[in-house]
Image (cartoon, rainbow, N blue to C red; front, side, top):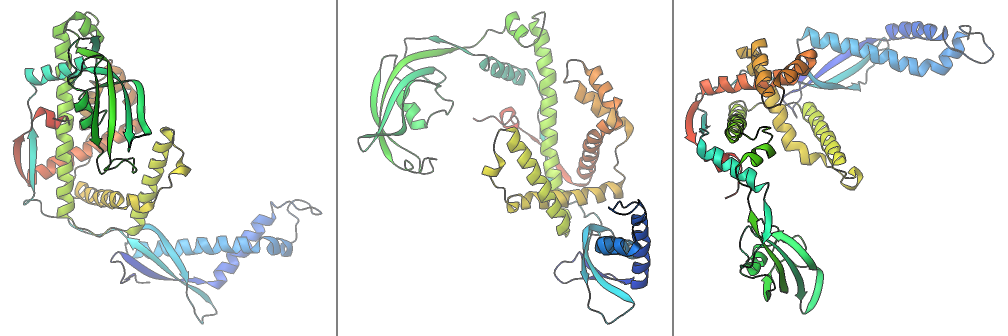
Length: 434
């Protein structure tokens, strides 16, 4: 039974299977006899139901089970003989045959691609470089201060970062439009809560000030009846409040979890957290580039069966995420094609990574796993308890081992590719908008 490739898919194979009818009938009788010992039927003692009645009632079910098991055995033996790695499940099709002694079938299935990891010497990778110093620590502290901002009334004109409270009324062609009116509406200027043109009109007004102005909605505005339309707004500023940031003192340090309010200790803790976060983001950027390089160097065919299975996994994960957000899944029917590109990438990467790990012996070592667990635990209040939690049940280390393997692959790729260090601005790395 030789596996032959089909024309539609380079990974598709077909194997002819032959099942002896005599074996099927023999196994069928044996199965029905076993079933008869346990069948309970009105009018008969347990185990005494006539064989003919058992066969009449359960024959089709038993035949299907016996034939399925025979096909599974035959298929397993065939692929083992030819040393084929089957991806997914075979599709079994009956064949037309004149044989009176055998049942003939074709098993159509896909195999895993066989390949040697490609050359990475031409791959170019930029390694982000950022040293965390006082400037980055100060900037982070300022962000933390802004997260704890308070506001106080001011008599001056409204400016960016001020909190304002306004009444507004919007009219289109002289008539109020839906969603264009509010009273005592608060927002902070410069945070993008309102359209830029609207915020610009508010700036410069003092509490008690009013203005009427024309404004044109963007062409891509979510309300289609207003997109690209020019309307007129009447606004009255009722309150202007200036932002007041907390001082960097013991009280602020205590709000950051430093029990004794030691500001120096707070800076030290922020520096440690910041360095870990910078390291994580740099590693993530490197990993993305490495994965792209691996895919480019290994343009392999991938089994459709694995892609379809991955699409289903992604769809299920999306449904669970929607449910956790309180959304009704039935109101948002998911389409498989939305996940096809992501599934293709994940399957391709999975196959390439598995081959690289096997070929280059990049499996996770116990000491690597321990180091990563201890490093992860440092971001918790009681690191030693986190470490104990991981090692209390070995299966909890599975995810850590996966990260270690990916890190090993990254290091291996970096050792093969052309790597250039590139300084990256702090704001850019942390994903802040200018």
